[in-house]
Image (cartoon, rainbow, N blue to C red):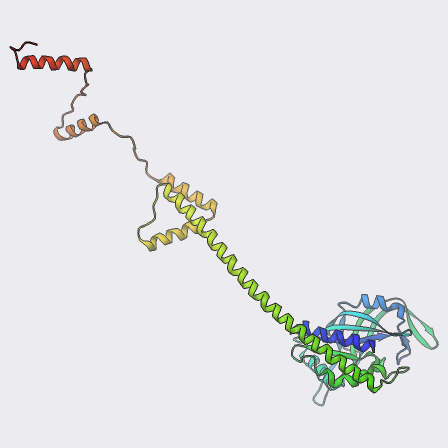
Length: 359
């Protein structure tokens, strides 16, 4: 029961993360019992095989003829996806499995993936045959066991796998197919896993329990998906609000910079055009500059501005200039006498006016 529960939990949970351009596959890569070719992968090699599986290809030889669609064996098979990881599952003390997850490429190989999905939904999915690169093997009781250094080469969907139904395709999950009807195929799947040489037939109660587990897992996955959608919507709203705030802050910064530059512009003795449209164009030009460019621009304007005489002429000089303009005669400068001299002149003038008066 543990192997089915673990693999189905993984397969159903993976539906939450499906890329629309991928189909996720879960399958048994190998176990540690002899296969139909009297070959075996010992349990002590499992850790290395699992560790070196990531990124290795999932392959198939797809036959699309006028008569039928089918698959072949290893020869001329091509990659249609990539292994994402493997997990070691313990069935019993003397029986272990390597359960792999992989991503199949929908866009690049649509016919192959669609064919696998159709066969899986019908309970007719092909099994998997591993490709392992190993140093040597050793024979024990007429079984050749992989020995020495060993590394994952590939996983290949084949028409007749050496492990028979023991390397079954456990699940397919894609956005388009919604993972297929798991309940409909669960009996056949369970039978494939357990109806093996040395295996045990699954009792009816175990099948019912398994179906219940699948239903519960799907309900849990659906609940998680709803939570993910709510969080995604909230995240989008928050991002929109932050974007609006950022735009508002940038607008305020730009307005402050423009105000500062307009002030410097007017303090330098220049003014914006009275026509609002022309003034706005001038502001846009000023705002488009960097700080350094604006300072250079303002300095150039100041340098080109005409020099003006700002000294104030005296009243006497002004009168003389006006008189000269009227008569063409230049008057000499009139010096103002001291106060005592003014008093003496007043007395003399008074005497001339009243010659018989006595002071």
